[in-house]
Every structure is written in C-alpha cells, then in structure tokens.
Length: 352
Image 1 (cartoon, rainbow, N blue to C red):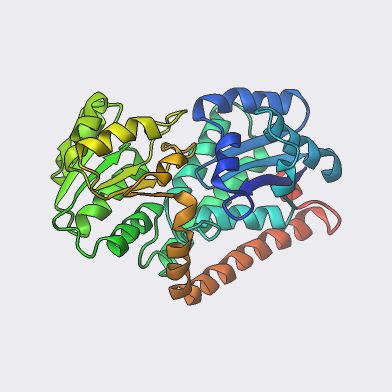
Image 2: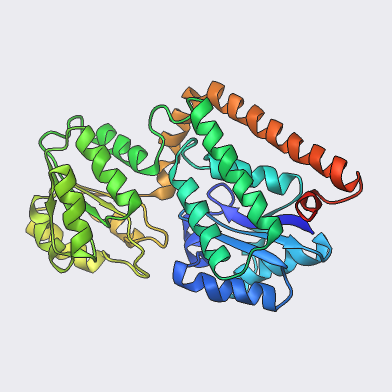
C-alpha cells in the first residue's frame, strides 16, 4: 500500500472555504466508514482543524484514480462549488509522509511551532483507530509522526515566543490597545484554544477577564484557575456594556453574533470601540459586523501577518526542525530499501 494525502489549508483556501468543508468530530465516524466502504481508501484518517481539512489514506489503487475521488469526497458532501477543487493539494509518498511529520510538528501551521495541532492530529488518529479505519500502515506512520513531533519539541527551541493562534490573537490586542490593564475581555468558548487565549490575556495584564462556555462547569473551571469570572452562556450578551475585547472560539454551527444583535448591544455600550477576534471555524461572528461603526473584527486568517513576524524570528530553529524531519524520512526510506527492495512503496516497510 502507498500513503497519500489530499487537502486544503490556510495557505490554499480562505476561511470561508475551509469552514464549508470542515468535518465536525461527530461526523467523522460515518465519513471514515464511507471512505473504506466505497473503496476509496484501504485505511484513512481525516484531520479537520481551523486551518486545514486533510485526508490521509493508505491505498492499493493508482494515485491518479484515488486523488480525484478523495477530493470529490470532501467537496461533494457539502455541495461545494466546482472551483473549490483547484484549491486542493495532493501528495504521494515520500512527500505525503514528510507532510504529516511537518503538520504534527507544527511546521506547517499558520503559527509555526504551535502545539495545538499535535493534539488535533492525535485526536483525528484516535477517532480513526477507534472506528476501525486504520490498519498496520497508518497506525505505524502516525506513531512515527508523533515521535518525530516530540523529538522536535525536545531538541529545538521552535516553541519560543508566541507559538499558538491564541497568543497571536492576544498579540493583536496589544497592538491595538497600548495597555490592557484597564480593559475587560470576554473569551467565548473554553476549549483548548479559548483557554489558551484566556491565559495569554492574563499573562499580558488584562484588567478583567470573563469566560463563557456552553458547559457552565468548564467555564467555571477555566475562570477559577485564572482568577477570572465565569458568565452563563445564555447571559453573556448582558455583560457587553463593560467589554472592550471579545475572543470567540466555539464549535457553533452558525453565527453567535450577527449585525442585528450587535447593533442593539453597541447602542447599550454607547458605541465605544469594540475589538472582536473570531478564531472559530466555522466562523462564530458574521463578517458584516465589520461594517459597523467602532467595531473592529478580525478572523483567523487576519492573524497571518502577526504570525509571519514570529516566523521570521524563528527561521534558524525551523531549519533545524526540517533537518531532523529529513533524517527521519531517510530512515524510513532506508528501511523500505532493506526490507522490501527498491521498487516497493514506502508503506511496504510497515506491511512486513
């Protein structure tokens, strides 16, 4: 079997495309089952995050036959427009394996070196494993990717500085407000990204921190740990009169804040400037609110410029990481040559 990857990411497609193609965790078991039942892939893992939608597959059919079917599988489930496939990339081994190593290590992320993606890759793999979508080939290649990512974290300084989307979002708040000490921020969504945003706000000296989440227990836990205040999810709009900054990171299927709703809230707060940072995919905030007076909206793609500043500061560490990944890839190629002969696919070294 050979290993392929097909997908889109923050470089090839804007957030309005990525949000249409994203898979909810609840949809993954059925999607994985259909991939194998339809004969598209022998083994499969679907990775869907705010910055990418990718299918990793072990295949026995020709690459040229499988890639269009994988692309169509992602696009057709949402009835997407025909022009979207042009934003996809596809890779065959060894490039597909190298790509997985880079993704798991945070080298292919918008914020290079971030660690959230490691957990996201692991969760995607665990779901596929639990539902019988992986076998010997993807099991071993993903375990190898996790080991490479851990080595990169322990042997390099790639995580130095702002190395999460959440910390970059808070960098943006500091660029807009010279001081955060007299500001009040609300984090809507207390998952991993929301919690990191709350921690970053606290570390930069935010005056008051409010946290809300659909699960009140989760909001209370995060707020208590950080010295903030938990707000009931159904009541968070009542706190708008004193809020200067809102950071959203929820998995809500639709907008939690639109122009009509924000209009009344802005009147209540006498149209004081409001900074909104939407890190959700699908987006949590209607982009039309950016047209409102004194409302400043940024989505996850808008954070790229700040992330690129951090990228330039870590180029030397990135080079060290790339060398380490190439060394690990050469180990795999050597194993293939020694165990299966030079004409076999890279995945064959896992079949023996």
